[in-house]
Image (tube, rainbow, N blue to C red; front, side, top):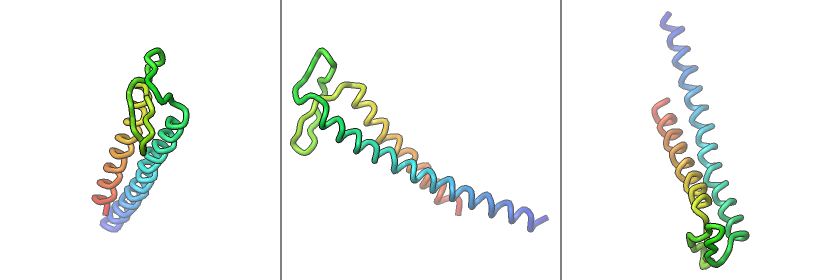
Length: 98
């Protein structure tokens, strides 16, 4: 009986490590997609404010000022914050599953 419980605990710990590793990969994908999206925005968004389209939030990226809409800023923020939170959860699972 003790051997069976030990084996179950070992399998559970291995699955926690696998889950943590998958979450770490997911956490890295958010910021990577954020970089790509921000680069795309830098190439396609207006360089001066446009009230009609809602592009009024200035962001300076290496000396290039581009005007974002509220939705675009929210999307980028969600990617960064979401990636950070998933990374923290993955780190905690990884730390406490050993």
